[in-house]
Picture 1 (cartoon, one colour):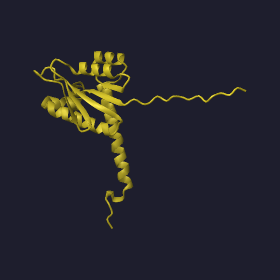
Picture 2 (cartoon, rainbow, N blue to C red):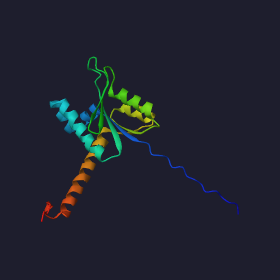
Picture 3 (cartoon, rainbow, N blue to C red):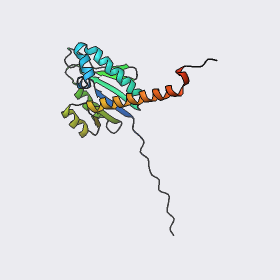
Picture 4 (cartoon, one colour):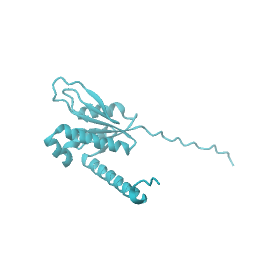
Length: 169
């Protein structure tokens, strides 16, 4: 019998994960955020960012929220951090879609990228670039499911702790 050398299976190293969120697309796709935006767009943006911060705590993806500033005169591209979430405000004459498309194109193969948008044309372009896609509605359902899991975990934890308070004796 011939000696057969062991076959070494090369495991692919997991690529770092990035979730790119088309901020205003999500805001206006979710009723709760859209209603808030009707009264105060800044409050709706902050609420979405709070949701993304909570989501980041439950996932291994870095998150980039992208907001259009293309109608703002003389606006330069601006990147800030909102807790663990990166926030990008595009430059004048640049849409969030254009920023996301360029990011995906420049980083495909380096990162495992998922884009959250319900823009139909954007979805086609993103898929063509090799990124994954979540519609704004699918992402909303994902967030609701995650919140429900957290609620159940907290209820279960509260049941395990008698009287739900610390015994100091």
